[in-house]
Image (cartoon, rainbow, N blue to C red; front, side, top):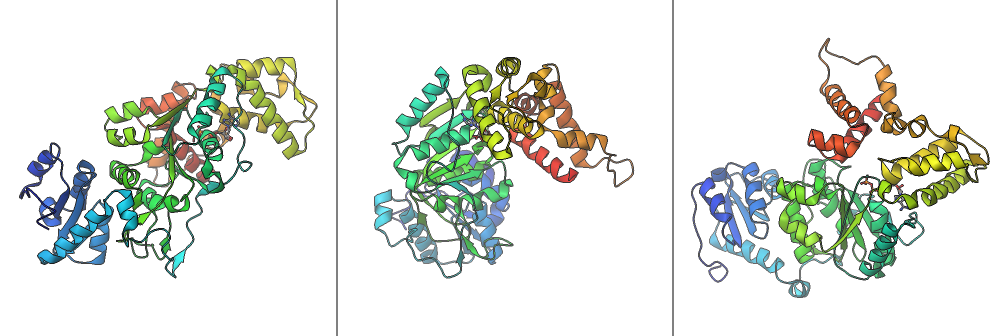
Length: 461
Ligand SMILES: Nc1ncnc2c1ncn2[C@@H]1O[C@H](COP(=O)(O)OP(=O)(O)OP(=O)(O)O)[C@@H](O)[C@H]1O
């Protein structure tokens, strides 16, 4: 241990330790949980020293205590009193895991090729797509989209991470899939994990998996998205939704290719190319302290920015025609195209919800009408009338709940979700349905608004 630890420093108060850690490179942290004030405080250390080995020690030696410390960022746990030998072997083990990849591969560390424990159950069905054909093609004829196609073709053969930005509905997931299907990884899986769609405290187990007993309800061993994407591509959508602690774990994964399932002491190694996407401004997120700068630079190797649809109007008609064709076939309608007035309106509309809004609009129109040509009158009111709220078309549940009597289980007290809903809807009204702007004004992420809307729809059913 003395060979591994040079210049050990003993701190007896948390504040000065944290202060010093900001300026020092620290390899090993041995943290007494009772001294620092528990798991919440431990997170601060893990965030401050993402590369350090963290061994938590505590007088309370229960399994749940150890698991919660490890969820808060510790790599291992020791119950007091412990021998120096025990501490030393845990540190040496953790340091071995951090050796460069070729050394780790040579170690007898459980690799993904390790025979699955008998009680291992299949990974949670994270959304995946394999070779081309299971996902729609990324359509675009505008100069901006031609440039994107060109970037995708150049980036696909690389192993480097791709960082995709763009407003919601601009096609970031489709773009990520195009990178995968044009790469040599296309024969393996494309695994998508939408960080905005799962509760924050479950994101880690969804990415890295967990072992039985890691937390209440973990009754089996489960592989996470990273393991499912071995040999293929892991697409982390809405990466801005990850909390800082998990960001530091992701950083470790990117640096070493290794990770541990939640509650596991075995280190696993996978070869997954990472593509991530966000509809937030990553630089602003870094300034606001919500996104780790070092993680950003790790991920932001091959950037792609998808422009909003209103900035590439040449794409609108080809997209609209593709969707018309697709949904006419699906719904058994006879539409063959748009008449001149309908076409002019579709092309001039601002499409604040981007391609997703265009696709939903065409689909809705096809379901509600039939004929050879789409006429101006068939267009939803919000498209015909530019002054109408643009989100009306996609938010039928909201109208339904507005006309429904308010649910007030405790007399005059409005439930929190309803108050929240009112505030969000007012902000949407103030910005003419523009989710990105409403979210910015409320200082929340656009995906939070989407998520809330989903939960309101579920209540309205
Ligand atoms: N260029 C395109 N060609 C064909 N379809 C597209 C294109 N761009 C987007 N779409 C379609 O629009 C919808 C939204 O696309 P996608 O989910 O990729 O957007 P996103 O930017 O990832 O959205 P979010 O940020 O909300 O996750 C999907 O149904 C997708 O198939």
